[in-house]
Structure formats: C-alpha cells, structure tokens
Image (cartoon, rainbow, N blue to C red; front, side, top):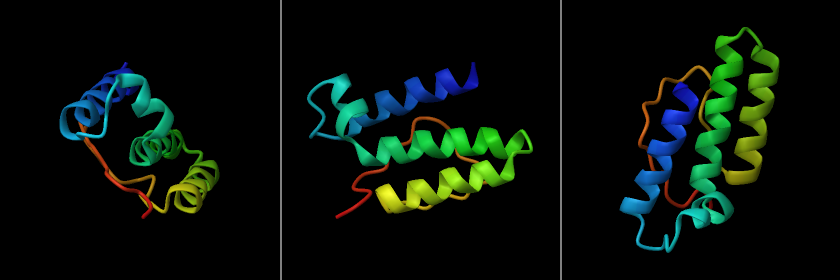
Length: 87
C-alpha cells in the first residue's frame, strides 16, 4: 500500500511541477528522474527486507542508467520530483 501511495504522489508531483509533462503516461515513458526514484523505492524495499545485495544491484543499475545515486537505505518521503537525471 505504501508503494502505491508513493507512486501516485510521485506521478502527481512530476505532473504538477514539470512544464515538460504533457500527460501522465509521459512520466512512465520518458522521465529518468521518476524511473530512478521508483528504482530506489524497489531497492529500499529490498534493503528493508534483508536483501542488501539485490538492493545494491538496483542502486548500481540506477546509477549507471540514470546517473542518479540514491542509497537503498535512504529515507525519502513521497511526492518527489527529480529533474534531469542525466544532462
């Protein structure tokens, strides 16, 4: 339930704060900051479930693909927009 709530809040945050967002599907398809944030949320879940190695793998992939590095143990609230993961 928390993941879904955070997902919705993050989508709304991008829609409300980024003038480049023309429609909600754009967030899922094109926004690297959103992708990195959701990857972090999966890694954080894994970390808190005791699966630290897999959580670090997610962190590594996020860093390579989006050039955003968020430690899986970090505590982030919902409604976050990360703009320009690369570039």
